[in-house]
Image 1 (cartoon, one colour):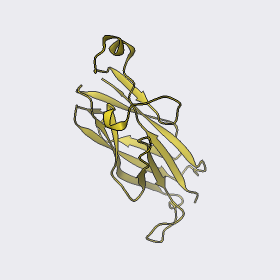
Image 2 (spheres, rainbow, N blue to C red):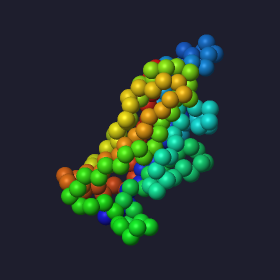
Image 3 (spheres, one colour):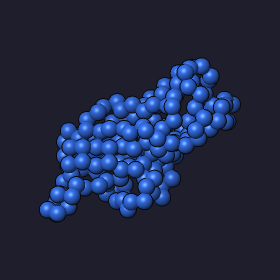
Image 4 (cartoon, rainbow, N blue to C red):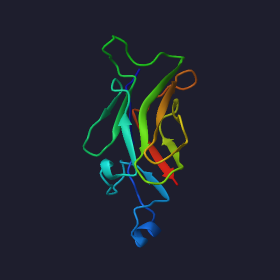
Length: 159
């Protein structure tokens, strides 16, 4: 099976009204590290991504993106890729944390650029300031034969 690799990015965009008033508060945020937009460093962003599964995820550090390698051709244990005609669930792949000051921030995952057969699920849809949630990944090869190499997951948030 071909190597599956996804780049997940997060950054913060304050609303125009908040920028005009000059506050640090935000009412919504949507970010993707694969577009030509200047973003805050992750340490200063309203949302942060943290790798939870070092065996399949890497943080390249240069722009705060996380790369998930699903189904590599070769593993340390001798396996290769995902089983055909199976559903593989991987819990707690990465964490999204609310680094802002507002509580009850609703999260959303835009999977429109993620290949068929691969889905991401938030363990919690809403997080408070200083809290986070894990994201699970499911790879379904029963009905789909994922062929696309790369995809991008966009993480959005709204207070």
